[in-house]
Image (tube, rainbow, N blue to C red; front, side, top):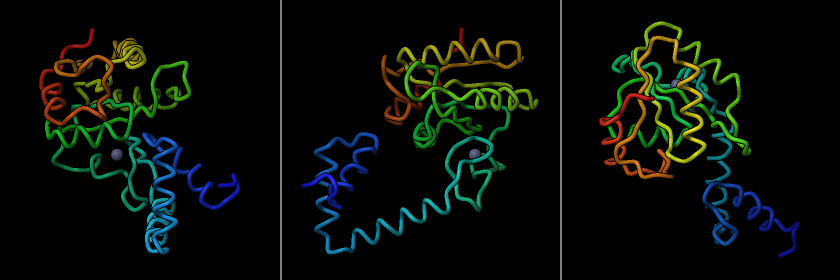
Length: 200
Ligand SMILES: [Zn+2]
């Protein structure tokens, strides 16, 4: 496979997806290449649809369609406006929704405090602060992971928001050390939301 072949280009692109190693990318690319164009066409259509019709929600930062901004989680009249759940990743929202335990609003940080390649952008922190200053919010739930960078992010947010007069809680019970919200099973996550503790 020369580095400029169509299949090699596809492998390179697929390998950029989270959780996909070189071998899996090669297997997927071969399946797409061999599938008599049907699968490739379906993927091209789906990707074009995502590229043209998806944007980030102006309120929570999650993914929504262009025609639904703010997203349904931000606009639903049955959700609680006084509680906001702060997450690191869009997948976290999907997983928390699956747990069925949380009925408030969300705010996606799109990163975390870290020296690594995905630091939180300062404008997200400013937006979070403004959202909380907006008045209705009484409780901020930090639904962050349990590794060092998530801990640093939680400490930073606790410091940033400590004078805002809101209760701040953090998921604790049930989440193993080093785990992330996105990959916790819904039952464990539901227990962690119910058993959230006051952030120190
Ligand atoms: Zn939203």
